[in-house]
Amino acid sequence: MEKAGFPLVKPRFSSFPKITFDVDELHLEEIKSLPWKHPITEWRELGIKHLEIKRGIGRHPVIFIEIGNHNYVIKELGYDVALREVNNYKQMLGKGIHTLIPVGCVAREEAPLQVSTQVGEQYERNIAGHTVTLLVDRVLPDSQLYRRAFTFENRKRIWDAIVDLFVEMHSNGVYWGDASLYNTLIKFIKLDVPFIGKKTQLKAILADAETVEVRYTLSDSMRYADVNFFFESMEWINEDLRSEGILRDEFSTEMDKVYVRENYERLYEVAQRSKAFEQTSSLNMKQVLGTVREAVYLDTLQKHIEEHKWYLSEQKRSEIRFSDASQDWLSNIFIPMCELFKAEGVVDVFPGKTASDLYVEIMTHKYYLSQKKQSDVGMILAMRNYAKQFGTKKPPRGFWQRVSRKMLKILGVREQLLLNVRFNTEV
Ligand SMILES: Nc1ncnc2c1ncn2[C@@H]1O[C@H](COP(=O)(O)OP(=O)(O)O)[C@@H](O)[C@H]1O
Ligand SMILES: [Mg+2]
Picture (cartoon, rainbow, N blue to C red):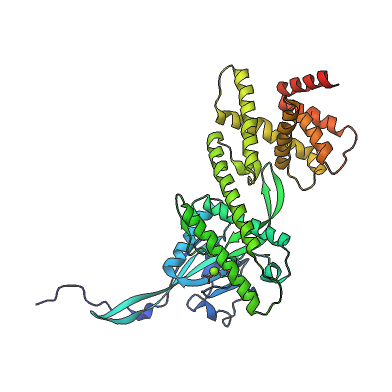
């Protein structure tokens, strides 16, 4: 009688290794030209051009190579994990989080492994996976980050970048699970945001997303787990520096941890409030304020748009919605003002500030002055007073009159009325 059940399938060994590419179309040709039938650790001998880059401490073989017009980083790891990692990068980039840019995943399947089990001989698939990413260049090397006698002031800038990354991730429901300086690349990035302008900023980039979980929401305990794990990793760095005999103070101290924790808590709260504000206003806060770092800016902006809403409702003789007022303010006031600040060179009077920084600071100054004077002073007077106090360069004669005239065109009747009131009472 015939036996029931499946027979033991003996694979055809001649067809191995089998290579599968799940790679971005743009890079497919270059990636396919690599010697995937061999483990990546053998590629140097096969003549593939390697870049001499020091990698952070980790578990897997990683190579940095140049092929065609691109520099790639290839990490060998389990196939399932590699697929998950590439997918994690894609999802995080979609949420605007600064991570590595994935090129794809490549599988090398070797002949199955024959294993003896209690139920007889079995074949197990034997697949190596590879995460391929674009090389992030001009990363600040470890030697600069930790080895130099870095003052607390210098370290703070690194912690600020790390805190920004944590806030970016956590407020988007992303849990890292392997947060450490070894899995973070730090570099200066030029940000060019519409209406905000160019800004150079120290940025932390998430490198190593095997353990990342992209969730809908993230519990407080998971957020704290990430931060606490990062604190632990600060200890490893101290250990490494000690064991390498680098004689200097610890890279991170209790004071650093307190700094990271306090800033993280504060900026996470601001990010949550910023998100809530985005919902009621339908404004993209990144576009308006860059990354909001102070809750007080949200309060002030709320008040500012309330005023605009009141003004529009008066004009229309009917109550308009906060989100409509916000959109109207964005396109008819904020954007034209920022463009004016750039075109007329107002930004040059305040080196280091973008047009949007200026708008927000003048707006904040307006509320400060108005409170002191017990009545609205308007944006133009606020700007003149702000420039008197904080401007670092003296513009040519007639500069402020010209800028004020142009501002008046944007701000309209209401601002004119405020100016008239001041003119009549104060001059
Ligand atoms: N695209 C990249 N650009 C620059 N450096 C990278 C890139 N990918 C990885 N690295 C470096 O290689 C190290 C090892 O990669 P990682 O994914 O962390 O591997 P492991 O799983 O072994 O920890 C990272 O810590 C980082 O220093
Ligand atoms: Mg790692």
